Length: 75
Image (cartoon, rainbow, N blue to C red; front, side, top):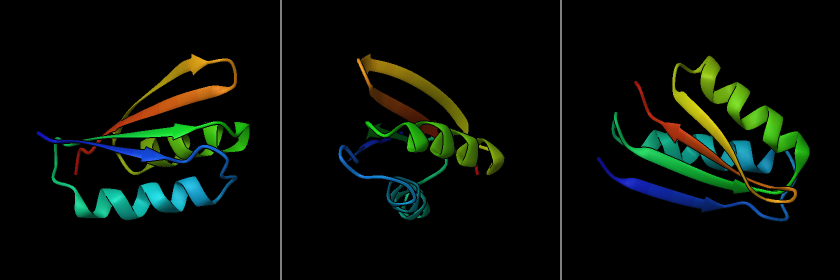
């Protein structure tokens, strides 16, 4: 299992979602992707998209207005 990080601070949707999708395509099942975001639209859309794709998702607020979306690739 490997862990990858994407820094998407300052980027609005759909950029964080597109970057997460491209990164997940390169990863193996069981790998973890941590997407750092600070845009409320991405905070809603990235976890929603990942869950619909069948991945495990956790959302952690790391600071006021900053989140980490932790995605475990499941397929």
